[in-house]
Image 1 (cartoon, rainbow, N blue to C red):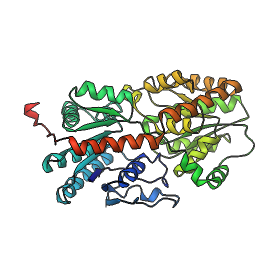
Image 2 (tube, rainbow, N blue to C red):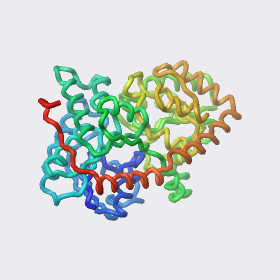
Image 3 (cartoon, helix red, strand yellow):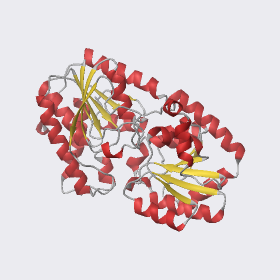
Length: 411
């Protein structure tokens, strides 16, 4: 088949991300011709050169559309609309694909894919990696002005028009089923690829040691975006309490984003709080492997309870237990599999106390580490997940007629 993938945020494992989109198109490209319609926004974040920018079998169409986590809401919206408009134009001019895959975030990228699929009469798969418009609405990035209801209608219409909706968490799947009961929905989580760390070998592990002082016994890690959703002020408050109480702990924060200035200020004031620059995926896995405990905090917003943080999968895959704050499926998973601990969101005292309790319990850490690796191998092996994803896409391409976006007056 010829598969067109509408994906605004494309990157490789040489970039500081979990690299799921790259792994997906790489897997699809083994058996099919794949065209990825994307942007150049992530090219400057590449810090290694282990992976080709375009995997074999994959053709990249790249637009010059800037994007960064530190952008204002208005700048982000401009970026999203710019990409969507250019993606639709290219999608209507390119050779006819057999199937279209549209991935959000943002919702505008999926909307572009759905529109092109409608106009070219081909089936499409809607990959939901974040819940939009619920996410920007609950984060305060979208004032109402009569727009919220229209966006929710558009969201449900896209679910219904897709031949298959792929979500990355069970709570996202439940959301889609409530919004569009007639939609066909499958959950395929991000998963993790620890084999990339093994392939990078000791080079990746050695590179991590350059960022960590040798005189700290315990490493508590946050690795991910310093975004508005990630409760970075809460994490830093807990970190200050922790390092004031214990002299043998290093709290490392690896990444960048909106709250980078706050992280830099904390690191400047406290020797035991360290900012680590964004790392390519194999080095990030080495950092997770080195950590005694990995933190997965988010703000207290209902929509965030459904998300699927890559740092969770990578922590578990490297045998590092986690502390999560989401009240949704991650809380249930961690408790069911005994691979970490749960504290309320935006509660720095509780977070600091839980970390201290974990560090004081080596037996509990060892058990949680063993459980983490076993749970990841069973539920989050990326190669297995992507084989299932490829089979689903192929089944849609063979058997599904195109569905069409409804007109608002007929909804």
